[in-house]
Length: 436
Image (cartoon, rainbow, N blue to C red):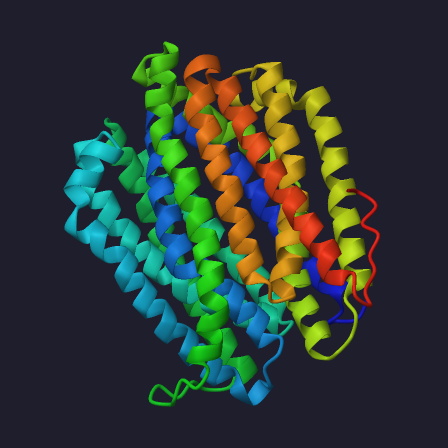
């Protein structure tokens, strides 16, 4: 297997992701035993705000840097790095300002816990470091240097998991706010490790970075980054609004706030991670496919074979996972987490996962084809539809209505994406997806 081949890069990232998921699985088991379900529910709400900020200032830059790096000469990588940092700094400042100004109101009204202001401040430092890490990581992946990214992620998460577990064992955390602060503190400390590792790797691969050099690629990078940013932001904002409104919807269904937070914590800490285990492979596949499609089209070559193979591979992996989880998912959750999820809820979340595997791959293809605006349109439509269903169905059917809404929204986005890929490839690149 050649060092820079698609299969080698996918395998390298898959091995890293699989090990990370295994580590993360036992980390979540430890969290479920060291922290109350209500604290984990509160942490999931904090992570919704985290996700909104990341989607605004990081996600779009990642897509742009990875796709652009695949089309950029080696000598211009340092300029691409500086351009990405300029754009990222501007976006981070814009996203962080409202949280700095209204941290108390966000803690009290959105999170329902006045003691989480400190966690929100620490979260901003964590995100700032994460953004620098992701710029470096995207440059490595776009130029086919994936081994460094895989190793960096493994070291970072090992440090994070160890620190959080150690602090929860050794330090007092009687209330939910203190527990969430310790979890965020471990995340932040681990980011220093990954940024340092990838900075050293960048200097070894591409040479020293001139701190006063020009940033010549800001305009073309921004042209790709901002549609991707809006896509990530719209998806995350809609999803986060739905998650933040979910407790109130469940209360209208007849649950207490504590029971609603506990149920949310169980879903986010146990059930969803179980259904999403194949993302170790799908994430690796999409991370490699996007810059590879971009590189092929820039060179005037057809990406049809790569697109077809990627989608079929994602479908096969997802179908196998769904079959296993539908048969044994309840027993696995009971053994590791001490509760057995409702069969209908587990089935809907597993089907949603299958749809997401195909959807993530199709989005990677469209981004590689530089169709970020198409991705944005589909994301906005499907997320708005999904949020409307959540608000309508959850107060009537509880968690079942919530899961059905998620499944339906993701399916709409997938069908739109597959249709767009067929249309784009029609002229001279006829493609039979075989799964439509």
